[in-house]
Image 1: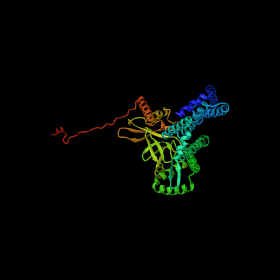
Image 2: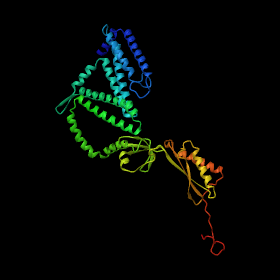
Image 3: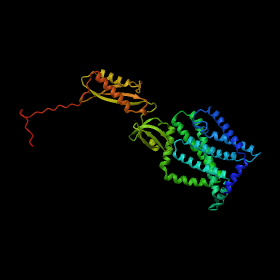
Image 4: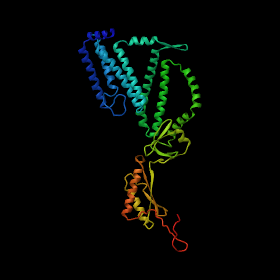
Length: 423
């Protein structure tokens, strides 16, 4: 009851209406300033803004700044309660918003990151509640009294939590710098999608490594001992994870050599599709029917891969048909070519071409060759449209499409009747 009695005493000593008015004024001023800055916002991924001027970290940070300043001024004349309470709530909200926006900007589709955000939010609000109740110093003192021995080193739970918090803050700052560098520098300077992917991965890996070393140094970890441990661990990983290391190196080779790029249509080990993503360990290939294949990057380096797109985005399709043997060949070629040209997705250059490719048993076999540049929109649908146009054109010209026919000649040896089969 002492805690609640102290809260009630502080509440009675403070001028509630005055503090409430000052707090509302700080919130309104922060909202107006955030809205004014939001109007100049370009709409891209940002830590400061979300879908609205109040959806990012800028609004709670501005409100915290104004509230903290107002609290310092009011405290010179009278005890404060609501301003102290509002400052602690706004501090937790600003930290949560900042961490959440940085993680969402860096890892936009990660479910693990969403879980980390929730855990961090619960911890931040818990610390805020302890600070409001005034028991935070007692809790930290209790945590500092609980110690564990690691060899000759003794460490408390409080020191462990402070180390984890320091590492987390440094990593958040590093991820923020990485995401900003990717958005402001790499996206503007690198136009090729594959090279941009490589630059993003390399930049993020280097910055995270440097940030982790800095964070461990701030916590007090001896980096000399860590380097020895890292060397031994590297040797072990080199023997036990050769395939994984090979896939990582192969991923960077694929991105650097640019023989395969995101958007290319390829055939790997009988699977044909479009490259939708090249990651450090594997490449994602998506077929026209929606199936995806996860191909290790080592496969793209060591095995035969057919690039169906090459330097351009043209994709060849063919349609075959058999017509009557007594047809006008030139007329059939014209009908087939017009059937393909009439489709908007079929390229005019190179123009569709029809060839007489075979003398079939039932007639003449023609093959229509044409190109599209958007295979991601489907191949079966455009092939069906061309086939339907071919069929309608041939029927309009009254050119027969023969069905398989077989003539059976029955002859007896003596010229008489064929004897009945004996049952």
